[in-house]
Amino acid sequence: MLTLLGVAVVIVGFALRFNPLLVVVASALVTGLAAGMAPEEVLAAFGKAFNDSRYVSVAWLVLPAIGVLERAGLQERARALIGSIRAVTVGRLLLIYMLLRQLTAAIGLISIAGHAQTVKPLVAPMAEAAAELKHGDITDEERDKVRALTAATDNIALFFGEDVFLAIGSILLMVGFLETSGIVVQPLEMSLWAIPTAIAAFFVHGARLLLFDSKRLKTKDGVAPK
Picture (tube, rainbow, N blue to C red):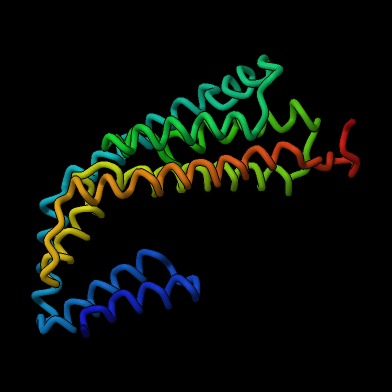
């Protein structure tokens, strides 16, 4: 039971809003030490995990590509595209993105979208353009709200969508933990039970997105357009 202290470290660290990376590392250290591992063994486990997952560093190659595309006017083109579609709204746009994100995550394609490669350069500018199309020149505060809603949509879609994929790390972790407690569960069973939760998350957050469309955002003059 002492190994569960790592979970407590994560909860307290996030509640106090410490650096997430430091919280996770501290949690891993506490878990390893509580399990009876020596400090050098914990460090060796970190090194082995990094060495076995070297392909993760390939993701950094995406950042220069995105930088070049943004410099070439990617965000401006995205805004112009949404500005030409009169029926688009923030809620409708993000609802479509959430559906696509959940479906792709459910089949294991969790890296084809995300904050760095999709939300910041594409979806967020599109959502801002949709807000301006309906409400006019919005304030910086309202622009931040649209960006936050866009990022939250990606988080929720990924979080509840990825558990449907039976080979995802979270499913395998739960299967392994249950087996240590004498409960034998197949990954497919865990995956199937995640489907109702994913559907519920889609409808709950989808309702929030559509309700966001009904809000009258303030313009920079302080008055919402009719």
